[in-house]
Length: 497
Image (cartoon, rainbow, N blue to C red):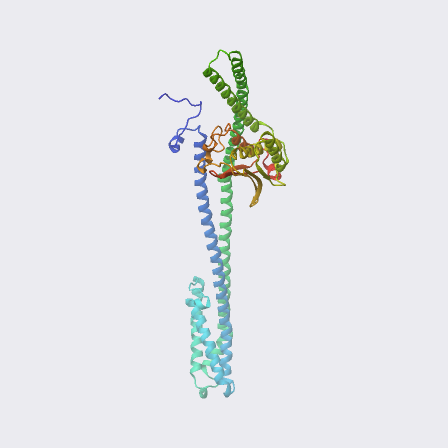
């Protein structure tokens, strides 16, 4: 095979786009594919980073909440230790100096307060999930608990030991000079309370510092997220918008060129159809002259051939007329208005009844069938559809045609139904193609252009047409049209009407 020529500056990449793109910088589809892949990779990376930053933000928020809860628990429990130290000192004094009959209740209250103080102290050092106390301990707090000069752990343990010794002392041996009591009331209001206050203040300072640090981390994550969004806008969305705009501009340009080519093709079609009618008229005229002038000398076979020539010329003239009608439907300017389809249908029926008086066809046209569109083109479409129904009900004992509408969702669907010959559903794809006739159309006159013209009319009106049928029982043609508001929104797409 010879080498196929291609337009200069363009190389066709074929199906192996990935390989061809590496060597072909002039193919728009390859360029679009490369840009799309590049933007997709950037987008995936950006989404991954955003997901990581979102996770980091969630973790930092979780840590802030956890730190706040832990700090609040530490401050609360350490503050409670101060209260318990004073409370136990008071209960110890009441146990020794109070009335004999109240010692049992006071001893129980002192035992409970001592146990709470012991557990709180153990929780502050080792952690206690039930009290919300963390197991960790800063170096400063550790030194305050276990190293001089404070040694708070030793102070608290000694204080708790004194409390337990006092609780083990029988009531009969309790007296104001009890050494444990003297130790308790001397330590609690001064040294121990001061140490516990200092410890609570340290917990407060550390908690505030930790929260401030985590909030700074949150701020950094937020700033990084904003920066990432700016980077996305610069390196993803801006190139994406530019690329989409470029593709849309090319599509608009291609659409304009296609419309121009379509107009030129339709103009050529119309011109050729119009110009071919003159030779056809000449053929018809010469055939008629020959039949008249040579009737006496012409054989029967010659007369039959001339009649066939005239018939074929007439059929060609009908086809050319159909092509011209199809071209006019596509190229003519639309004049939209509110059209009474019922009135158009009744006019068509009246014309058919006048031209075909030998037939009696029952036609039911519903009242109030209105639509928005070009009256002249809609009249042509209705005439074609009702004319087909009239034609294909020939030979039926009770020919009937119905023109009505129904509502499906938010759409009004018009339909023209007949009880004619129908058609096989497998032939539906051929129904609206030019010059193609169905098998059930054999024996009926027609050019095969009428339904193609009807489809073009409804397409120009932003609608569509389809059909259902049962062979031998009839056919139903459905069509939709745009409303006035929809028409105004899409009038540019409908041919600049």
